[in-house]
Length: 146
Image (cartoon, rainbow, N blue to C red; front, side):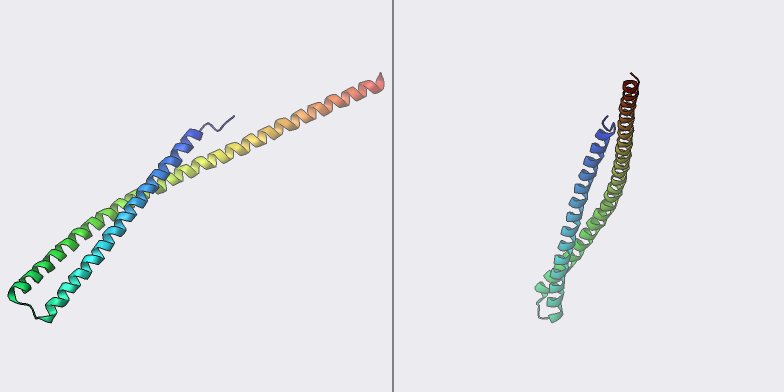
């Protein structure tokens, strides 16, 4: 008799795999945003270095200050995006761990079911062997009397 919860176990495995893929996608996005933040910070540092030299004209100085403001705003936007992605990652990780626990529970049930079936099959086999041996014994007794 097959394991009656096999379809549910298969479904749990697929759900877990799907959530795992989603988790990997979010983690990739997080790395991309972190890389973008690093890149923007480097550009911002370059502009700050140019400002420290003090060799710019009024128009150049105004433009560099404008760039600095834009970099700061963009970094803040990226940090907010990163924070949201981390919250999403946390939620997906929670779902993943929940699904993994469910799958493991079903796998344990399946293992117990297989062990029980194996034990039951062994018991039936032993009973059959005992019955055959008993019949053979009684035939031998009848043949020796007869």
